[in-house]
Length: 201
View 1 (spheres, rainbow, N blue to C red):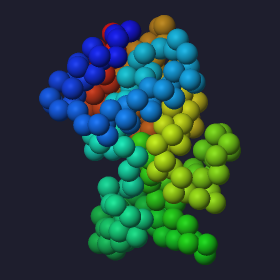
View 2 (tube, one colour):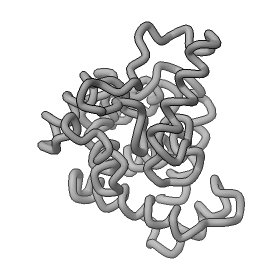
View 3 (cartoon, rainbow, N blue to C red):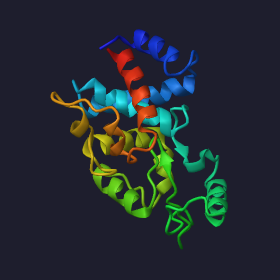
């Protein structure tokens, strides 16, 4: 794999378009560190696609974000409620973002947007981190990195894992999107993944 300086030089050009902030570097470092801890000597394509997913899901910030990119839970809930009332969220049967009796909201958070109480519970059980009592913990850098890395490696989001699409016999940059979200923007995220992979090589 490329050394760290060469890696950051390469991604600054593509996919970051010539500029890389300290915040983006910290987020990338958190994801790389979690991956190296979870899979020492692992397949660099896995890391490349995780970075591509975070790049896409966080609107290039490489920081844990809330759904809608709102700065507070209340603002995110307001935006989601307005979109739901206007019929712009036809895929949503029940507004999962609304606060429960304890005041908790299970809206999307992190490097990859985990939503719904059941998904927070699944990740809590898998990681040994209580995200149900305090779902806002998914916004913590280390927790968000753990959710991203473990979730994608173990297939905790959709049942599809990184090893299902990247192995000695297979390399499916388009199909890798199924790890998180069907084939939504699959070609776009695949392009980001290839750019990160080129930088890692």
